[in-house]
Structure formats: structure tokens, C-alpha cells
Amino acid sequence: MILFLLRRLVSGIIVIVVVTSLVFFLTYGTSIQIARNILGPSASDEQVAILNENLGLDRPLFEQYFDWITSAVHGDLGVSYFTSEPVAAALSNRLPVTFSMVIVAVLITLIASLALGITAAARGGVVDRVLQSIGTISYVFPVIIIAIGLVYLFAIVLRWVPSIGFVPITRSPGHWLASIILPSVTLAVGGIAGLAAQIRGSLVDELGLDYIRTLRSRGVSERAILGKHALRNAAGPALTVFSLQFIGIFGASLFIERIFALPGYGAYAMNATVQGDFPVLLGVTLVSVVLVVTVNLIVDVAQGWLNPKVRT
Image (spheres, rainbow, N blue to C red):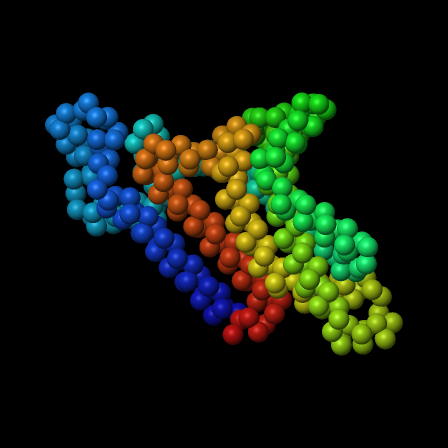
């Protein structure tokens, strides 16, 4: 198991280095005149040259990259070109907003998918078809339509929750939940169908195997068969889909934050992209890749625990 973890950890570090290196050289190594874009077209060549020197952009590209990656290892992601705010500090202020929304969305997705998938596999028949139809309908609806519908019903008509804004959990847990529940549900709706279908399909296949019939012939209850045997053995493919759903939810949060006016990671990344704020883009890329690698590592560990064959 230790060798298995080491292999996964080393491969994750390689992915982080490769992706961040590609982004760095594709941004700073292009013909884009960064200083000119910051100062505007009316700036003189002398002003551009001074800013290039101040930002260190007049140095060799590999020297710039070495300085950036060395600083990044120590937690220094540079300073925004447009706000002069340290990127690490800005991300630390905005990531809790995004993580709050993503974690709640993942919990909703997991609970709903398990309930739908297990019920559909165990009951079958009409229940199975109805649940699959509900999942398909939720999957095909555009996110923007779901968001508008939720805001109209719960924020405008019922006035149960606010339509925009964010309240930190440290200020008020109740208001925090109210501020993120609509975007979290919006994020979760699309992922429930795919994960529930995977859980249902894996369980149906598992429940048709010989050892399940043997357990039933010995008088083992259906609840014990599902919980102790079938669900654990069917969890492998579902975990893979769940990891993809988590990454998809995190990616979609960039768009959802704009709809609900949340001051999170996504809005910060989109503004940096529009402005060409390269230190911010690199910081966002690094955090995103580290998150993806971490999620995949956790899933790999879970897969190895559930199925020893995966460790080889």
C-alpha cells in the first residue's frame, strides 16, 4: 500500500509541475506585451521599459520561471499586476466562498445519488424507471434555467433565502447556509443523474452475481447484502465517476458564482483572464491542479482500500 501511495503521489507532483510549467511558458513566452497592456496604448516606450524592469519581465524566461516556482513552493504566488494584491492572500480570501458552495453541492450530490441509485437497483420495475426519468430530466436542463427557477421560487416568491451575496460561516452559520444553498443545489442537480446512474448500474450488475444468490439462500437480509457486500464491491466505478463529478462541480462553480454574485475563486479567475493578469492566472492554475490531483489521490486510496487488485 505504501508503494502504491508513493507512485500516485509522485505522478501527481509530476502533473502539477508539467501543467504549471506549460501555463507559465504559454503566457510569459508569447509575443504579448504585458507591460504595454497594463499601461495602455498611450504609454511611451520608456514607461513600458521601466515597468518591464520593475516586474522582472526583462530577464530571461527560464530565470523568471525558476523564481516563480521557487516562490510558489514557499507559498508566494506573486502580486497582481492590476490591484497589487498578493495572489496567495487573494485566493485565501476567495477560496472559502467557493469551497463552501462546492462541498455542500458534493454532499447533496452524494446523498441524493446514493438514495436514487440504491432505490432504483433494489426496487426495480416502475420505481427504477421513474427514478431514471427524473435523473435524465435533471441532467438535460441547462444550469442557467435551473438557477433562474430556483431564484424565482425560493428567493423572489417564497423569500426564504437571498438571491445573491455571501455570508461567512464565522459570522452566522444560518445565514451562511442560506447564502450558498441555491448555488449549491444548482451545481448538484446536473451531477446527480450521472452518479445515480453509475451506482444503479454497478449495483444491478453486482446483485446478479452468484455470490449474492448464495447469500440470499443462506437467509442473509437484503439490507445486509446491499450494505455489507454489493455496495462495497460496486463502489469502485462509482468512485471514479464521483471524482469526475467533483472536478466538474468545481469547474462549474466559476460560472455559478457569476450568476449569484459570489465573491469567490471563479469570479477572481474570470476577471484575471479578461484583464490578462498573469500572476493571478498562474496562482489559479496551481490551486486548480493541486485540487484535482488531491481529489484523484483520495479516490485512488479509496479504490486501493476497496479493491486490493488496484494496488498492484
